[in-house]
Image (cartoon, rainbow, N blue to C red; front, side):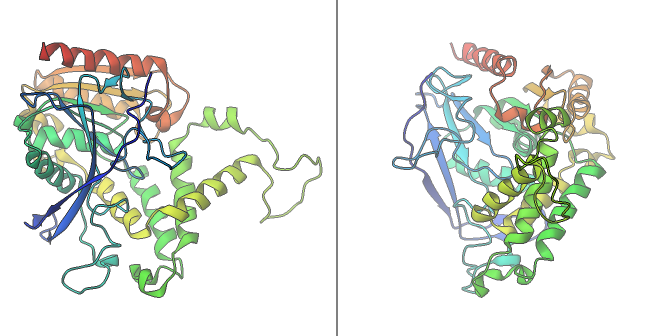
Length: 379
């Protein structure tokens, strides 16, 4: 199957302040986005793809002259793929607070003339959805065929049905959850502490010092990466394989002895070269705050009552212990309690949370079938 080919990011500027859940607002901001496929005459074939923690607007295709620049969901989105750009007009938007082009902590605070740093306002999943809705409206699209997302992106897809139910027909939420468990919040907090205690963090204003808190970012990424993989996949890939071919142990508490240690350090090093520390703090906190049932006394079914008339596809993976199938089933039950049209697939896959990014044929088959169902509605 073909790729969408070379793509070019676009920018959209907003002068009107964006009110945030915290009571603050974001003014004079820019969102970066990409589109794939062609918007049809009645503008009814648009699908918004929401990104997860360390992803961006670059969903599919590649950048000309940049090797290894494929979009993070290029295996799913493109001509003839599960989300077929021969039929759908696909939109990827980089959320505010990110470090991939949209206004974020690295950009200039119009009130001070200096980078926002730690002064960038706290953002929530709901704030991101509000920002996306503004951009979609600017594109002249009054109703999306679907909103799709995995992990944190799945939270955004769910939030669309709660905040703008009249502006989409389908919600496709993959490997997601209605709220973080205490264990998940704990992992996020440990990762954040690794960053804020790095001497190079400087209270979030490290830009002025010409440094990056790479040590903290490395540890944060290592912690996160462990939670994205299953025990079985780590065992199969690394087991207790040694870093060295030598049979002799170093008997060191600091040297790398095992392949898994080498892999995690590599992932941490790579992440620290491109990701912003303040963005990491913002996004993990947005994950923590997401809890649509909270405003309804903890009753998730009451929260989803506003989504009546929408259609849902949920997908989970058996070995995903970060956002387990049980959490997806909570969402399914809330929808069923409201007599809302929902399909649910629980994929027996060994890859853990990262399975939503991989090429499992059963998973892609579910996605293809569902988007073909949406396409049939257009006929």
